[in-house]
Image (cartoon, rainbow, N blue to C red; front, side, top):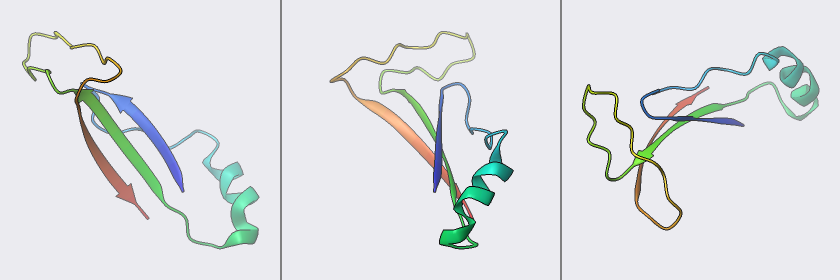
Length: 70
């Protein structure tokens, strides 16, 4: 399982550039792997087109979205 995160306004993380090396090193454990992309934003995010992005603060709410690929 590979997990990568992005910050809003990005919506989906890219596979790592060294994905083939990761596959090779993990092949002894099995042939199937998973990739999860997690996007995070502040719960106060206005989601407008003005380009204003709210900061993330510890202890405050957030929104997240994930995409799982096999």
